[in-house]
Length: 197
Image (cartoon, rainbow, N blue to C red; front, side, top):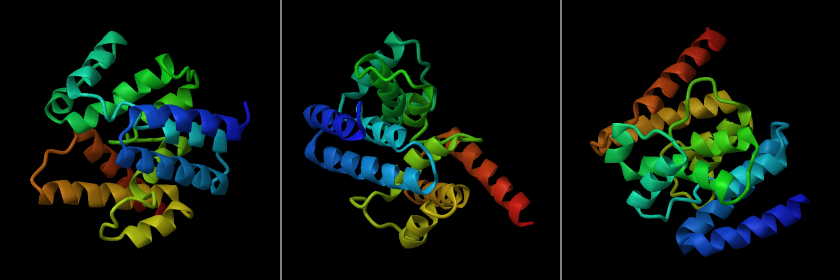
């Protein structure tokens, strides 16, 4: 299937399951991820598919997301049970595979990790994580200009900036952060120190 056909098919399918704002965000992520992939010499097709499907479970009820994860044997942590916004990535991975027929492990993993990240991410995982944060419909947060520029230059540095700002933001609004996000930040901070002395 050609990229244009994949794009057309997934666009139609996401329009059916997402509200208008989430659909606009999804288009932004898919196109941003595809552009980043082209620049970083990663499969544009994989980036586009992962971008389109990353939030496919986002508009489902919290209980429904939990049911989907249980059905496919995906473990849910206590923090995910307390914070509904975290589960949609795992539920989305399940739907991508079982409802939308994605069997590519790289794409499924990029959907799975797009909210928290994890130490030692693949370039595709980083691209979807970053595109989710920087796509044009996103409210411009502090450092957004710098982060958007870095997205097309240095994926690791961009990850570091986003994770730092995310953790600071959650701290400022007194919201619990996923330990995996903190681990991921520590990983990219250490990697940056090693690289830049």
